Image 1 (cartoon, helix red, strand yellow):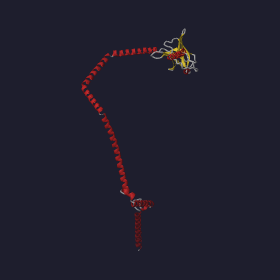
Image 2 (spheres, helix red, strand yellow; image 1 turned 180 degrees about the vertical axis):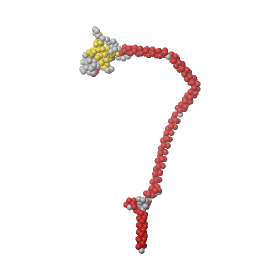
Image 3 (spheres, helix red, strand yellow; image 1 turned 90 degrees about the horizontal axis):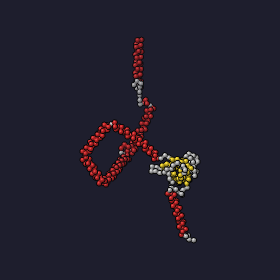
Image 4 (cartoon, rainbow, N blue to C red; image 1 turned 30 degrees about the vertical axis):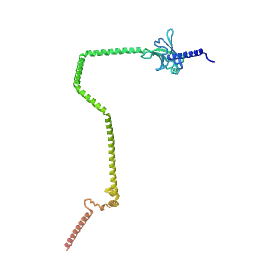
Amino acid sequence: MKLRREFKIGIFAVIVICVSWWGIKWLGGQNLLLQSNIYYVYYDDVSGLQESSRVNLRGVEVGNVRDIVLESNRVKVEIAIESKYAEMIPSNSVAEIGSAGLMGGVEISIIQGDAADVIEDGATFEGRVKPDMLGSLADKGTELMDGLTVTIDGVNTLIGGNTQGITELISNLESMTASIDSILAASAPNINSAMDDLSAFTSTLAANTERIESMLGNLDEFSGELAEADMINQLTTTVESLNEVLVAIESGNGSVGKLLTDEALYNSLTTAGDNLGLLLEDLKANPKRYINISVFGKSEEQIAAKAAKKEAKAAKKAAKAEYKVAKSRD
């Protein structure tokens, strides 16, 4: 069965109306695709607040204003908060109207309470109005102007009491400025010449950049090659000297070479060492054979000879005495 043309047009019109209605709601800050909880707040004054105004929680937008209704002595505000954020809001929280910034606009901020349970869907928040931020800034500006006025009065007092000193200071500054100007004027040719020379030197460097870079590269390569060549020469000389020493030792030249290659010399040194060892052992066993030391500085033979001489002298005296006795008897 074919649909009549009027029926098709009617369906199309309904779709257009639904899409338009959804678009209007979306432009007004209402996202119909998100699940939200509805709450109510009562205020005495909601100046600047309007439908679709933001609802914030700790600075994050969690919903918006759905409706504003003026009742007898107060204003009823309907707000929508996304369901996933509603679980973070205790039941004793406060919905506070405040300025959205210096550029204007009003928004509602949810000030979280400390209750254990969360606020239920359809419940009513306690409402309050935050002092106007611009009014606070105006108060701060008034305080700042008062302080600035006091400062200016102090400066005027200071200047009024030191007019002569300030005048002298200004005069000295003017004189100093004039001196600097005259020095600069006198040195202008030299300065210009120096600047011209510097400019010419810079231009020369710029024109020869490639040559300078090439020279520096060549210098680096030459330095590297020179260093490598010097090290190689030193190593070569050291190795050659070591080879000459080894050859001399192997051929028996020099003391070390003879000691290593001459077997007779080695045997003689061994025999001499053995004899020296035997001599030291005999010296330890019979020291008197090699060393005679007397208490009075004389050897034992001298002491024995002296004793024999005394005995002979005593015997001679005894013989003389016997002779005298025998002669006296005769």
